[in-house]
Length: 124
Length: 209
Image 1 (cartoon, rainbow over the protein chains, first blue to last red):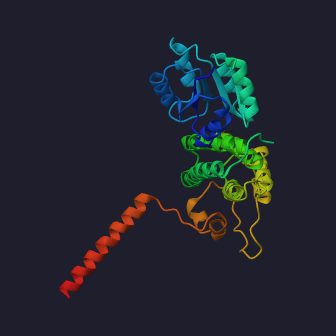
Image 2 (cartoon, each protein chain N blue to C red):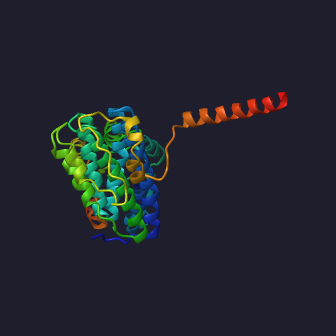
Image 3 (tube, each protein chain N blue to C red):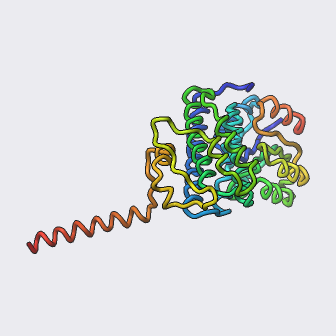
């Protein structure tokens, strides 16, 4: 059962959409971060994060740099990561998958696409 | 077709975000026109454009998303030196930015795309396909044309680099882009200081007189 999802994206709109899309997972807490650095803070503060939804192109610390740090940290490396990429940056998505991300969804995506991938990866 | 409802709340968040990104685009274009090619300026605006593209796609504003995608391509080519920043290229970029802003505002007002950006996108395509430094007037031809009541455009030398001073007196550009004048904060601050000094000296002269 999903308890906590960390969503990392520099767009307030995408965070609002996550609220809508993920509301179907009852009792699941959605934690938001606007960049990789903020996401590292959230990881340190919040225990039991089950899934990370990760944008790549962000200021301060981008998604790939964040992913690299997560993969180096034993406490976090088992948390599945789904890359949420945008058209035109396919090479970054491939890099992210090589670095250990479990899957990706390309913007624009449907809520059902995200649900399908989450359920495939975490077995919800 | 989206499997979720575009709510007024989502439109508000999208618009607020988009306005910030469009402002970043305006600043970048003005800086490029004033100072010439600067890879850092282009890199700084590509991030906001990428986010605007992603957001527009999520809202189902495909025309806006496609235009921004093409604009990203053009700016990347400018950064690589494959597209030159001629006056004609700036016509296309500024005209496109104006159209993009209109498209975003109208999409948010009407909760669906109401402004066609195909002509602006075609103008970007011309910039991309023409060889660097060749036939930049084609870009001007594909750009949105001014209204018939406006004065005829000043002929610009296509081979000439962007010239801030010369373009500053071309009223057609000003009329097409915006009804606002952007002034560097430092200059404005300096001007206010000078006005302050002027008032002080005038008062002193009155006292002497």
